[in-house]
Length: 311
Image (cartoon, rainbow, N blue to C red; front, side, top):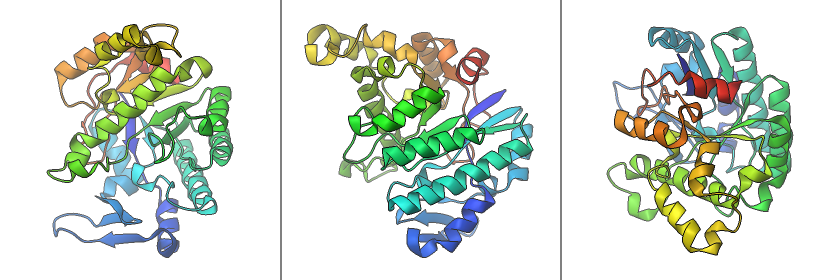
């Protein structure tokens, strides 16, 4: 079984964080006696720095115990370098990508990896994507946009042009939603995370971006958020309003089948619906390991989806 949604932090990245702790405002905080320290970068979205995040031997042992034969490693969203100046964001991207490539080369049959890029500077992001894939990475993981830009905006053209040339996997992973209504009961994570994916996925779908960059392999985390469930509403809008249909050559439900989705849904009926809606060749097994809300081991083998995405 493959697992295409996992996260890891190589030792080189931890060393960089400690060396640059003042620059990136990195803190290691003990919150509970029975848990590992929480890592908080720039005052945002702290998380428990479990040993499986940073110990590759433990990660591989957990992978084997779960029956996973191959994992696609990704940088963690909390370390997306979007809050810092270009030189800092480029530096952490470079360190992360080189260290993940080194790790994957040590265990090529068990591990492959995606990199990270300084998305706030699309030219540098394109350059770092090229460098990452030259190192042997399969593509990169990015957030669902920036505060002032959606991913379909022309601002990101250099990045997507390079991704199209490279036939790169672009794994879109949301950050916590900052809607002020979602401050209680873990709602920024529970519904805010899939909501951010839904907004991004809807924007990319309706923009016709996949027609413009047909070689880019876009993978959405957490089953695509809420968009598969609401695709009928998008189809209705396509029939009703030219604003919705103007960039598309077919119904939104047809474009939905041109992206990829992981199985991090925690519900078999939801997963069955996703497969039925987009096709089994567009769904790939994922776990989100080792975060708290991981599906471990991942659900569904979906070999067709894995082969379709990874080749």
